[in-house]
Length: 230
Image (cartoon, rainbow, N blue to C red; front, side, top):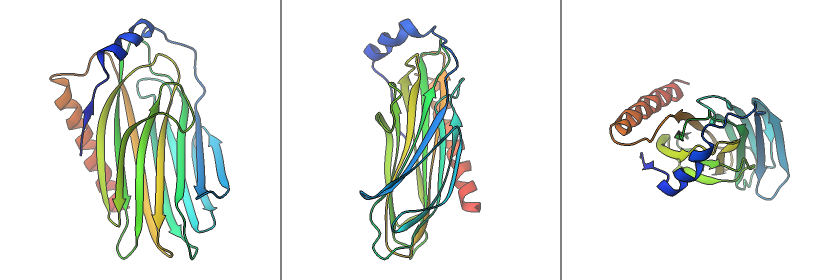
């Protein structure tokens, strides 16, 4: 499933005055939160993260997160949530929230093109459902913003991708990868989100759209092959 959403002319016009703003170097911060239901929250913060062996009441979770916060690819954020294993007898809903703050795209680039690639690897008879989503927040908030793309996978190994175009806010912004997972006891699964960003120097329209979609398709096929070989 691939969709294109362009920002309105009004929104675009509102940021054109700040496009030449370059700004000082911004501090990249990635925050990972892992929580089961309303239980205690495990939190990790860094420029790039590898979280292994984390357990909630009924899950064992491993997470890697890294991205780009400055330059033409500012806002790219990759999250691999590996070995989602329901180790308890009565698993609740598992939440994994990953946000990268302090992203700064170059001034003079009016738009940012985001490609969301979501994958699930659940091999029957495992029973796991994952709702995956990507978010963009021009206010640089933590786990907040507008949803770029969301998809639910139930008991399958599959993937989905989406391309979205947003206005460059001309100031630090945040992006998030969100996972909501439910599982039967004793099951395992792997869920990943690859959010890629590319600042572009002008409106994305007409002949540029097929090229962008083609690049997104090539990336997504390669990602699926890589996950299948893992």
